[in-house]
Amino acid sequence: MPHPPIQSDRRRALYASTAWLIGPLLPMSSVLARMLIDESDAVITGLSAQLVRGHNTTRERAVAIHDYVRDTIRFGFTPHFYAMSATEVLSAGVGYSNTKATLFIALLRAAGIEARQQFVDVNAAVLYGMFDLRTPFVDHSYTEVLLDGAWVPTDSYIVDSVLFRASQAVLRTEGRRLGYGVHVDGRLDWDGRKPAFAQFPSDEPGLSRHRWGVFPDVAAFYESTPAAWNRLTDILRVTFPLAALTGNRAADALRAHGPSAVRNGKLRSRA
Image (cartoon, rainbow, N blue to C red; front, side, top):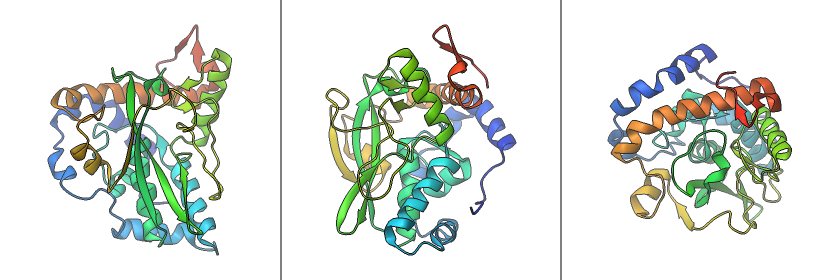
C-alpha cells in the first residue's frame, strides 16, 4: 500500500492537543473561496495513480480508493471543521463525512472516475459519546460514484475499520442504534455494486430530515443552504476546536481499548 506525505502520529497528536488554542485564529475565507475538491493537485494525482495501479476495472479502482480513504484517514476532526481541501485532508490524516468525501471524490476524479457529493442531514445522535454540536441534526454528505452507468452511493469510507468495529460493539452493548460515529447497522465494506453506509442507511425513519442534493463541494453547500445546521459561524469557530479535541480523544480511546473504553456509561478521556 502506498504511503502518502501525511503527518506522523506525533505531529498529529501535537496538532490535536493545541487545536482549541489555534482554532479561533485560523483564516477561513481563503480556504472557502476556492474549490475544495482539488483533483488536479499533483499530490492527489500522484497518490490516485498509485492506488489504482494493478486494478483492471473501474469498479476495482474505486474500491481500492475507498478502502484507502477509510483506513488511512482516521475518523476525526481538525479546527478547520469542513473548510479543508482534499490535499489538506490528506495532510491532516483525519477527517469526517464532509472532509473525507472531499478527499474521496478528488482521488476518484483524478483516476478518471466520475463522482459527486450528496448532502443530507442525519440525526445528531450519531455523534453521541464524542461531542454535541447542540443541534438535533448534523450536516452530512456521502459520495455517489458512477459505475457501469449507475450512481452507487456510499459513506462506508468515513469511519476507519478499528474505530468502526469498536463503536458498533459498544452500541450493541448499550442497545443504541446511533453513536460513537456509526450506525449499529452500518457497513464497513463497499463493493462498488450496491449502497454501503456507515452512518446513513437512508431507509430508516427519523434518521434524516433534509435531502439537500448535489453541490460542487462543502463550501458551495454552506453558501447555498441557509437552513444548514452547522455552518462555521464566529461562535462555532471559537467553540468547535475544543469539541474536535474532545471527539478525537474519544475516538482514540475506542481504538485503543475497544468496548472496554466505556465504563459506567462514560468513555475514558484518553487512549
